[in-house]
Length: 179
Image 1 (cartoon, one colour):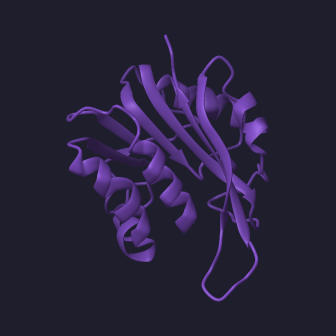
Image 2 (cartoon, rainbow, N blue to C red):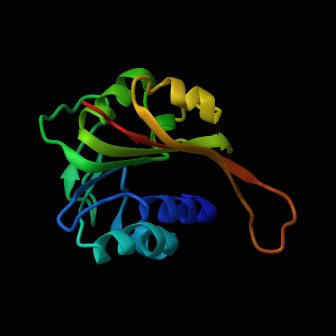
């Protein structure tokens, strides 16, 4: 996750009417170390504000690692369980069937709940375990989630210290899943 991406997420999630006890699923969570040490702004900007609001967060990834609460492979897992908010950040570029994965991710959101998707827009190829090359514009990303209420979409640029140009960009999309 890029630093400016985490700030955008923090700002926009703070506006959602999530009650204490709201259940959040963090798909593609990676490890506790990744979220708190390698990229500490993920914890600081995304998860700590949600925890302070009384939300509960389930970290899910394809492989069992420290800090992963559930093993979920979004290409093969199905569940009747639903959440108030599902976060799917920088994950859709690592699946074989993007449309199927997008449908499955949406299935985990309760009616009236929210879905936050981020994907690279301008970013180098990075295998984990694959990189399918998915680098959509925000409009192309919205097309994956037709019949969902788009609350906000944007292209986020990241800047690195001592650099005067934009090195990477991500597409972000915040949706409400209606009945």
